[in-house]
Length: 143
Image 1 (cartoon, rainbow, N blue to C red):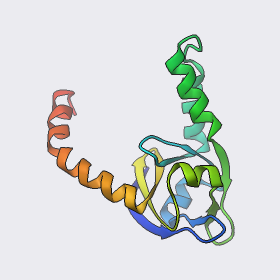
Image 2 (cartoon, rainbow, N blue to C red):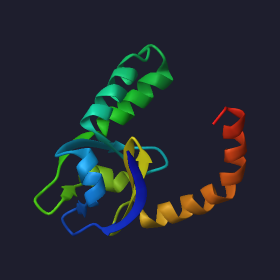
Image 3 (cartoon, one colour):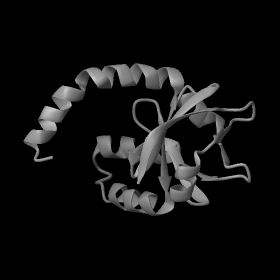
Image 4 (spheres, one colour):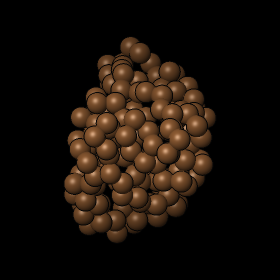
């Protein structure tokens, strides 16, 4: 399980250090793709396969499903850690997530999210304001 929040710097070649705790759970190879809210989603291969099966089951005749699957998979790339525990983030993913120098890696249960520090700060402020009402809604769902 992934949890926690870590601030790291992206070097001039587009490499990002992955926290040791995340490296253990991700394994040597994993998948990064365009996520929601302009962050990147990073999945261990076993989680990716489960998600892939679910997405493949969506009806391709529905435009929304087709668009989501197309966008999600077109941004996906297999990543591998180097000897220093870094990954190379492709330019298209860095551009999508507005990643320049400072990145925040966030553990979100079954995945890691990679955010630009500025976008994460903005998102966190908004999420903090909605946290109490979200908790009330979750109680109504039995959580």
